[in-house]
Length: 169
Image (cartoon, rainbow, N blue to C red; front, side, top):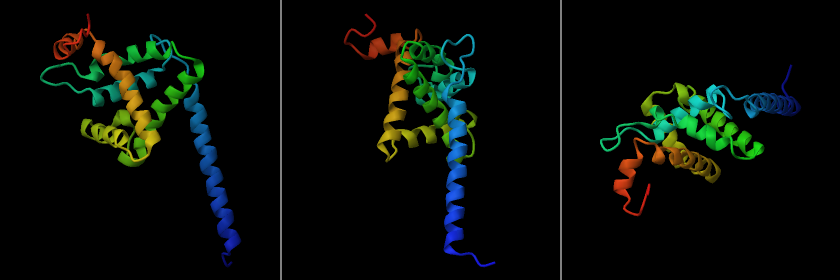
């Protein structure tokens, strides 16, 4: 049998349809995960994603020994997310899953499963991405998580010393 242009078009359309159905199925699974105790809005998986991103975005330093992954920022983020409208909650949760799963293609594993250097590389790739929507989404997420980081009881005193503008007063 000879492959014609019609065959190629049919194969292309079928491949696109299967990809769309698969992506829709994954999106539906991610879209509305139920919260897991003790979290009020996030599932345990989403909390783990937040901790992984927090660890990459806020590593331990000489000035602040506590890294973001150990600071329980998933609890802060959960409280923040539980006070926003339901659609925005779902979109933030979808963003978490998208970022976590997106590294499978670029780094061979979910963001949570990556080594620290690979997490830093992936986070840097998001924050400096040429696509404005990816860059803005990653920057917004890191900023929201960072709100919890800067007010953490082990971090706030250092921030107060660094910012002589009434921080923490």
